[in-house]
Image (cartoon, rainbow, N blue to C red; front, top):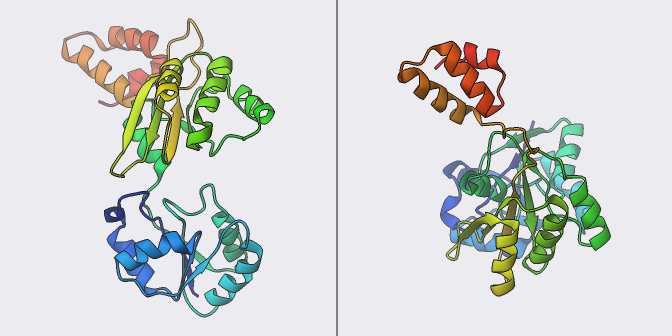
Length: 272
């Protein structure tokens, strides 16, 4: 039984390709890439001579048959232009086809702009929602944002530079002002992470038009009068701090429950 490897590639810095990914790309019979011109830069950099074919939205129906036939004879690696294949590209359809044929699908961990931006954003990371690219048309964009108006999780989007300011403006109008982050050109020479309110980010990009690959993160909805739910690390730190100061556990639990929004019984049973 042969394998379909899902191989993440660097999102900017070529040094971010893992040793395992290098080995797989050299050993497989074929590499299926979103854009062979972009992928050739990476493969040439590491002197990888494996045969390369394109697999993207516009030729996926034709290429699926070719790739599945190759998988009957040997292993295939699926890569995207940058990051993890199958996220915001047709890679998942190849995965579905491979699974239906009884072919092993082996994912490799690696680069991903959404989670890379998230961990540096300063926004809650315990629960988040990845939403890909927002709709381009204004009517669809407004409905898309309205459907997220009471979403409590941190929201992650990809957006193009020429649409970013418009998207931020629609978000400000519908979601009202709230914390947001724009991560630009991650891992590249001109990497930039801008944190602020939606209003502040709009003002910045009106003065300095955005460029490059963009990941947009927006804080989730917080109901007025209801405390924002703390993540577990913060809860543990505050509770441990109160207990270290000699406060009784029952009193500490009651106070932290009121401040954090966590259930009192969960806090009482929490091992520190």
